[in-house]
Image (cartoon, rainbow, N blue to C red; front, side, top):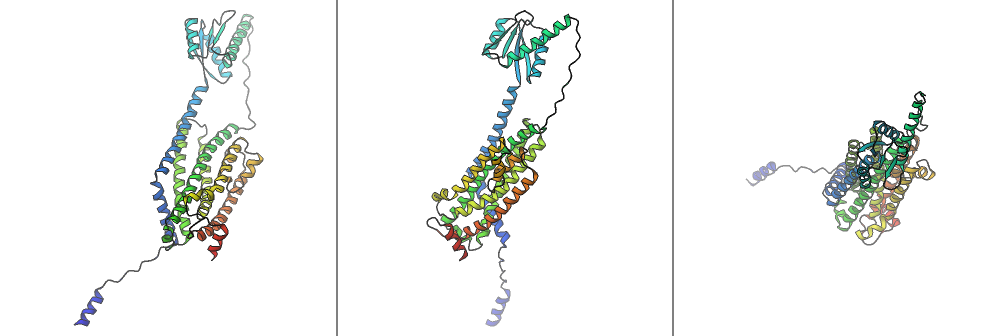
Length: 410
């Protein structure tokens, strides 16, 4: 009876299912997902993203205001006819400005308009022997415009009185030796704005990586994580997760910036604009892979947030140097400094996009620079991974690089 019961219980008990261990790819994805979910709820991250977008939109609005107020000249006219108005507009076209002629009934009204800033100047009695131009503070462009218009009217009147009929003047064909010069300048400005965003995000996400490493070390969470995965899997997941988040943020900023630039009609070549933005995003991917590995390896050498600044300062200074050189490259994209630094890994993600946009880099230069960057990333990931693995479980004071490498080998 007892044997039978024992046999029945044994046969009715469910078989235990074996729990399969996670694959390396699954572990990396789990760490990446944890980094994304943690940072995307961080108020500092959300506020920083909103501030960058608002700055981009503010810059676009500022550019619209500047452009809208720079090409219009208002000229008051007293005792003038349509011939004078047309002559003023024609002279304005020759000087590259749109002239808006405002008619006034008397000199007093015109004088008040000049004093209030409603018009830049007022022409009184253009048909008289001695016409007057009322301005508030000196003549400047308004003086040149009015003098040229009256001289053209006088010349045309004298020739008509003499019975001289002039043929229309020839139209000058403008041939630009550098046809894309203006487009290159515009693209360089767009790239420079993109580099500012790129620099800000590299600093931001590099610090996220470094802070995450120190937090895990100081709280001993890393000991639990390393019980189920290897150091390189933890490092890869951390870099991948924050990298995807940074890439998404970069793309959102790019979409907002491009849409705003097209909506406000700030750029003339939308195709060139989009190409420049895509280039900056591509260089962000390379730059992030490089600096995230450096920041993570450096942060693994310390166990306190207070000591973090001392180990990531060299990488931060390299970013600052790259940003400063990129500003110089926008003015001289073919100069020695910008050309050389665009091939230096760590500096090239900030300098080369500006050189490309300004038309100062050949296609093979971009290829060589990208190849050197990929080689540098492979080296940094390998060495940084060894430092990370050797220093991750060591707490206390700051660990030396030699000690971390030796611990990893052991």
